[in-house]
Image (cartoon, rainbow, N blue to C red):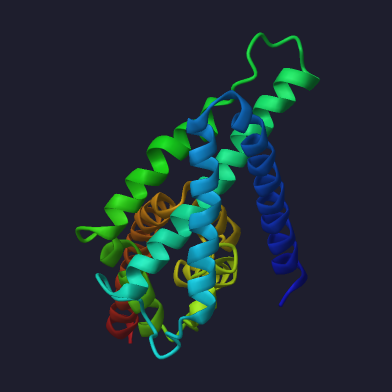
Length: 238
């Protein structure tokens, strides 16, 4: 793996470990102040641990593409949603603590961006990715296009779907998107979109992929017509 790939992984796991640490600290704090935050914190951590444990025991290596409405499809949607929820919850608390303790000039320490992602963006992506045709359009279709272009597909063993272990699968997927679009969408951009937005990130990247593929097809069409015109001119001159 290239050095820049390792840097992405180090950064991703640094964010993850920091977010988990903040979640644990928040959980110990709200145990005294109220039960709602306690239930939310324990629920997020327990769900991530359960899904991760199941992922390491699940064997799905025979599948190339996680078809829609299969256990692997639901598992992947849940996995990406859980890890994004934990990261958003942790970063929300981290920014709150930063502004509250380190920057007293601000009257409030709340950081609404991660709060909005946690309560609205992640659930919306989870629901849209689990039902309807969104997963087929955003992920399965992209992987099929990679296969048609002989781009190496990411492996689908169970460990690649576990929260936080799925970063390896996501990075391979991101490199495939970059290759599919002629590097117009960098691998780091795809990785960060799903890392911070969950399943919604797949939808955003798919829309960007469609845009770039259409532009690439248009460019190839214009180039082909120009080549035909040049050939016709050469024949007439001959």
